[in-house]
Structures are given as structure tokens and as C-alpha cells.
Image 1: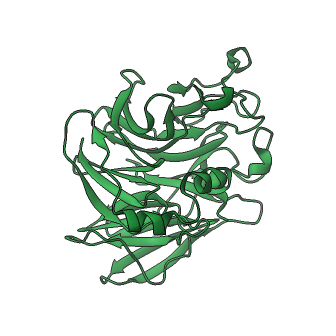
Image 2: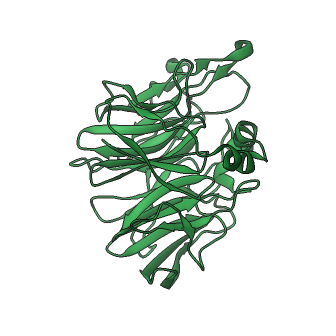
Image 3: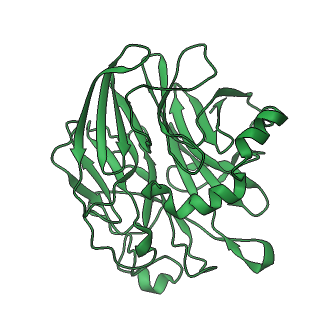
Length: 342
């Protein structure tokens, strides 16, 4: 089981069930979600059961897929004109974060970061593990390349430390490194599970989706969207932003996504996942979503204001958001990636 998905694995299997791929094939493709602005939504690709992140290099889209339960993972490619993602030979059995720059595709898989280049249509002819973390490191979640050219990544959660102090290397932080995997630096800390991140034009700091604690059940702690400036400390585990009196000494999140009332008096967290930016606007995938709207992609300004739904009507939780040439590419747990103009 991949560490970044451990806290969500039960939720994923409850939502889909082990027989979901067969049932979905028998019933045909899922209905398209809708863009609130009326923009056309189309199916960009299928074939990755758990599409965690998407990156573009040249004419190809590369998809990081997590391995979980019956779902096969790795790095997949969607070639121009194709609607099917195909596993790239020679890539790991599971992948989580993916980013691309200047013909090189960077992939996080557990404690490792790989750099792949010279794609020949079937496989990468050059590959190298540029970072291989020690045993006291939990691994990486999502990745992005900053305007300074460095590779940024969230550090995966060890679920044993759901709401307590984790002493492992770089725990609860966002780090950066050179694109050769060197000079690892902690950018910001105090985030329970920094999940995915993105950079907006003209802003040097990454915007990060952060998942709050799972336990105790119905604890009500909000999920966060943060702008992770160098030296920021968002307080976890001493501060979970449920009781702000304990948080006065810590960096203020950009947005606190409050837990939503659910069935049987439970509280459902909105679970922000993929995140992307077009100009001054952020787009965030909400895995569970709101009590009324369900799983969705919401948009807001980079200053945290103006939050509203952008895509709704998903039949399964939403995982990923990628931006390319003004389009959003949104992946959900039907194994479908949708394309819509932002």
C-alpha cells in the first residue's frame, strides 16, 4: 500500500468497491461532470484507476497513477489523438507526484524521485533515481517546479502520526531540491499532510492542499489551502486550526475548509487534492466535497477570496487537477480524466 494513500485507502474502496472497474465497463462511461461557467467538458483519457497528478511534456500528457487494491499504478502516457492512457514501460509500479520541464519528467514513487527523459513513444531511453530517501523518511506526495527552477514536493504522512508529532526526516513539510535531486531544503512546515501543490504566475511560493487529521472521528478539524512561503510554520500537530487560540504563534492558512455535516451526525472533511492555477485563480479538487455539492472542483482567487464551485456532478471522488495551455485536466476515481477550458 502506498504511504500517501494510506489514510484514504478505505474511503476509496468503500466508494468504488472492488468490482467497480467491471461494473463501470458494463454500464458504459460515466456521465460527464458540468462546468458551472457552461464551458464544454470532454473526456480526455481513461485507463488510470487512481490518477493522482498529470504533467505535460512536448505533445504528450504523462499521468502518475497510484497502485491501490485492484488498481494498477505507475507512469502512463496519453499521446496526441488518443483517449487511452497506456503504462510506460520501465516505470515504477506506483507513482504519486509528477512534473515536467525541458523534456524531463520527474516522478515521485515512495522515497524516490526519478528523472525520465528521451521518450521514444513507448519508454524513456534515459532514467535516473535522483533522490533516494533513507528509512526514516516517509516519502513524497505531489510535486511542482517553481519559478526558480527547483523541484518542490510535499512529504507524505505516516498514518501512525495522524495527530501527533512525527520525528522522521522532513515530516509534515514541503521541501525543495535542485532538478538533480541535490540541496534539499525545508520550505515550510507544520502541515499534517501536504498533498499537492501549484505555482501561480508572478507568485514565488507554492499553493498547497493540506489534509487535516482523521482521528478522533468527527474531530471537525478543517482542511487547509496554504501559501507556503519560506520559513512558514502552520502549527501541526500543536495547532490544527479547529481552536484558533492555540494557533496564534503560527502562520495563517490562506483558506480553512470546514468539515461538512454528513449522515448519522458525522462530519465529512472536504479533502482538497489536486490544485492548479490559471492567472490569478486557483482550482482545487475536493475529493469528498461539500454536503450539498458533493465531489467537485472549486475555484478562488490567489488571495483566498471568491471561492465558488467550478465543476460539479462527478459520480466519484475527484483526485487531480492539472493546467495546460489554459485548460483544466481533472481526474476522478472512475479512472477518467476530463478536459475543460478554464
